[in-house]
Figure 1 (cartoon, helix red, strand yellow):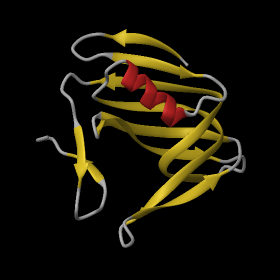
Figure 2 (cartoon, helix red, strand yellow; figure 1 turned 90 degrees about the vertical axis):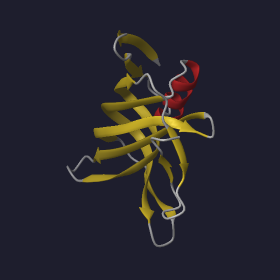
Figure 3 (cartoon, helix red, strand yellow; figure 1 turned 135 degrees about the vertical axis):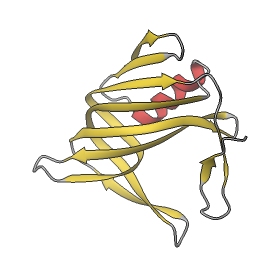
Amino acid sequence: MNAKRVRAAPAEAWALVFAPGDEAVAALAAFAAEHGVEAGSFTALGAFSAARIAWFNLDTREYEEIAVPEQVEVLSLVGDLALRDGVPFVHAHAVLGRRDGSVVGGHLLAGTVRPTLELFLHVYPAPLVRVPDEGSGLALIDPEA
């Protein structure tokens, strides 16, 4: 992956261009850890050769995985970065377009880039922290943490 800082104040912004074969979620988390990103938001578009998304079932308090084993366009990818257990955690939702024009979407667990993914990351100066939420079973951002 290549990166270029596109803004330094009042908050940093980066343009990240992922290469074929990069796993988007893991690469973004690694970038955030390497650069000390403790809070941010992002948008992206591009394509994946395969992906794994999920839908959160509130009744079971578990993610139900959906395999996407085909080339898809990343029509929309939005998310945030916050600390979870002291390390950057990527929370992303994606809408993926199939060859026939149909779409599938959900919580992005993993996506293998092909041929590219262009992601714009906005870094915030104050850290955000995810803490366990007993009601949902999720780790949610706690603005007070």
